Amino acid sequence: MAEMKIRRLQSAKALGATIRKFYEDAWAEKPIAWSVATANPLADICTALGIRVVYPGNYACICAAQHLSEKYCSIAEGYNYKRELCSYIRNVFGYILAGEGKHPMGGIPEPDVIVSISNSCLNYLKWFDAMRLHFDKPFVFLNTPHRLFEHDIPDYYLDYVLEELKMCIEQLEKISGKKLTEQKIKEVAHYSREQGKYWRELLELNKSVPAPVNLSDLANLIFIPTSLSGTAHGLELLKEAVAEVRERVRNKVGVIPEEKRRLVMFNIPPWYRLGFVDYFAARGCVFPFGNYNRYLWNTQDIDDTDPLEYLVRKGLSFGYDGGYGSTLAETLYSCMGDRLAQDIKDYKIDGAVILINKSCKIMSVGELDLATLLREKYKLPVLVIDVDQAEERTYSDAEIKQRVDAFLEMIEV
Ligand code: SF4
Image (cartoon, rainbow, N blue to C red):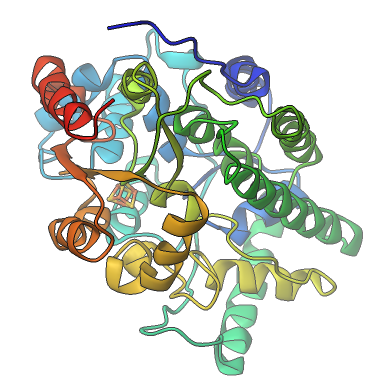
């Protein structure tokens, strides 16, 4: 196979050092919060109160990227965490139960508080509750109702979550020993909103032909608005990434020199094998977007004039504008229909790769129907393969390459 030069973003390459520093620095700070990695306003409140936030979900990705998922998942399974559980959970419990030793990025400091929210999946809820039991630390929980069909957020939802948020703030103020000031809350809401704007611009820029960024870099860059939410540092990093991408668009520089096909990926990419994307790139195929990075985080602009209302709406709006406020439904075809139709057109998509992910049932439910729809309604060639996001034991390189090769032959690249 001819080698195709892949132009990775400098800003995405530099992120490795940023992530390492993020974890190293955390050991020198206190108190520490472990947060769910969705749109969690409690994480922003922690930042405003000087509580350092780390994200076990992100740490699970790092364990997988460093090819330690076999080790950590096996340890967790030895303690009866079932193989059917999401591999993020098994990686993190494996890390916790492994105890002291050498761990990726030096490990994550134990929590002084666990901050959770109900806009995540049910696995997340039970996982964080299990960590509360394990560490026996305060558990601060924000209950955000889901909507069962698309409509604006009703006022009584806003009122309810605002009251919940105020109670959570009181708990977090006690843990931090500080009072939440108006200036601090304004700052985190502002940075969070601005990060969202730059993230969306990044995805908009990737509608250009040739595509300036591939999905592997987008997958890495999502670390910024998720794990550095509400921080000036995160905003600066995203601005740098956007500036680099604008420059590429201006000069018509694509991530690969000769773009032949533009594909969309469904489900979470395999963190231990992001080079999977490069395998397609080597044959002239780019992924300008995936449902994972386009339909979940920072999908909409929320007014931050009233920062508390901003945070309430942020928690209630996880997923897309007018969506459901949860991971539960955002990735189902029946929910993303019109948006997906528009994106297939705007991103000039020629085909799709659907990952069936045994860990993430939520993102995998309905994917075979989606494949049928994409083939029949949009006349797109579709490849369906089994790939877990953070469980390397189930990945067969030879088998996947064989399937991918057959697909690439079918789309004539
Ligand atoms: S089941 Fe899916 S949404 Fe839930 S924690 Fe695992 S990967 Fe995330």
